[in-house]
Image 1 (cartoon, helix red, strand yellow):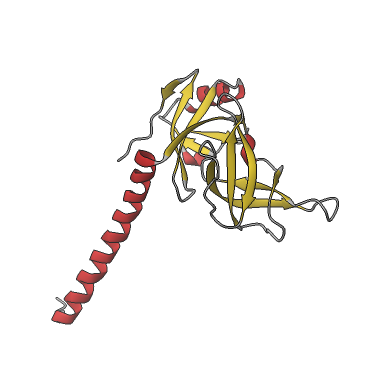
Image 2 (cartoon, helix red, strand yellow):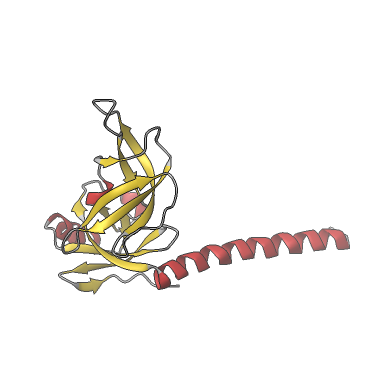
Length: 190
């Protein structure tokens, strides 16, 4: 049996407390985003890939995540960007602008979402801003076993919307999916 000194026990206890605190902070961040974030409903567009190793999930695309989003000059793949959206009809959101820094929206109907640039296209002229594809971390949603294929069909038929929680920091999470305005597959807080 290995005997540990009191200093070793203090170090082990400190590491355990720090790891527990870090895990609790991550859980608290997710729960507070889902509970307190501004709720918006966004139409989803069909995306086709499937992964047998990740279980049942639905792949979601959004009009504000396509390759047509103008981004600040000098933006490269992997950069963090803040995308300001405005309502553009029922469950539809339109990009108003992007920034490399978090700027609060000037209009209370607008929301700002934090994303990561996954692809940047070079503009045709020097007067045009570069355009990018942005991922927000809300592009897939895990669902109960056996329901993924049916939900993907409803996405292709444009019957599903995503209910998103958007925090003041720009963080975003899927709160639920809805079909014809009825919530299905609520994300549990814990």
